[in-house]
Image (cartoon, rainbow, N blue to C red):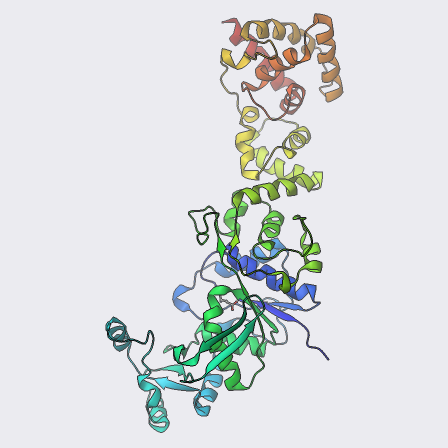
Length: 483
Ligand code: GLU
């Protein structure tokens, strides 16, 4: 029976969820789902110095908001738990002991000071540990360990030959074994290094596809040697390309927000962010379409479509995607989002949220733009005579004053303040006075908004503001233009 595909997201709780972490999670999730497999979550918390309070919660929150639900993990358990590395320490030391016994690893007693001196010594050619403890007689080493001498456990790399492995994205890679450092497997505090724990856990958790950033590519030969030392099957490796900004440099704060939560705060919808991230190194074959829901991605994603060329994170593209997602949201959902942002800005004042949501839907790029876009509605801005000047509509402050005085008594008679009534009334006003619609609407719009460019026209603005506020603004404009 063919093995069921199993992937894992293995974040270290050392800070916020970067775009790169989320891409790993997404691709791991999609590979599992597209093959009817399982996706698990493992928390890699063995680096105690870099542990950040709250980081684990941010991981759960992000996965949940993005819809990347796992099948096994610390919170829901599963057949291969525990899923937090700090709860698995006994396992790592058992497996390390096995390697020491079989000669694939050895205790190293070098002090931190000695290692630091060694690296400072420019004569040392080998960039890494000089393997001093490698040849200590195993019986003597065991004795020193038993006596409680501080030590680490290092991997004993073969000194000749080469190691070859195949990566789904980067192809066949071969390295000379003599270039591989005798890396630390267990630190002096008894915690495993990532380099050791990832191999043990991926094997015990039956991971078939190890998907991660390409920064781990150069260490992968060492992991292969570990798998071989245990006689374990080597999983399929899928290393993901570097993410760069539009200048080709590694994506960083200089380019813009680089974490999921920052992007959400900037006003991007999680669905748009996920869609954007899906394309950071992958593209569906034979398709030019770029908008895909998570459900759709689950069906068509394949590791075969991953490219090793650096993936460009273009904020303009994200803006475009976000607009697409906003336009496609069910209206009720969009209305609720607008309301949540607008309510506190309108304070206690009444406003027409339906019309506001309609007006904004075709115009908003990101949610965080909304407060500034609607400032003319939530606040009364000062008038200026030039605002009324519009050459094409043949409008200026003086003609506007006349028009507004004509409109005011008519508008004051309106009892049902809705689109049908207002449009009919304004149309009728144009007919009666023989004025162009652009002129009348232009004057009214600026009177209501005190701003030259507005999202929405005069009728919509009047509706959003409501009868009382609209009439008050009209009166204020007339008053201003008088002076
Ligand atoms: N804990 C590692 C990280 O956060 C995981 C790398 C991997 O997926 O193997 O970078």
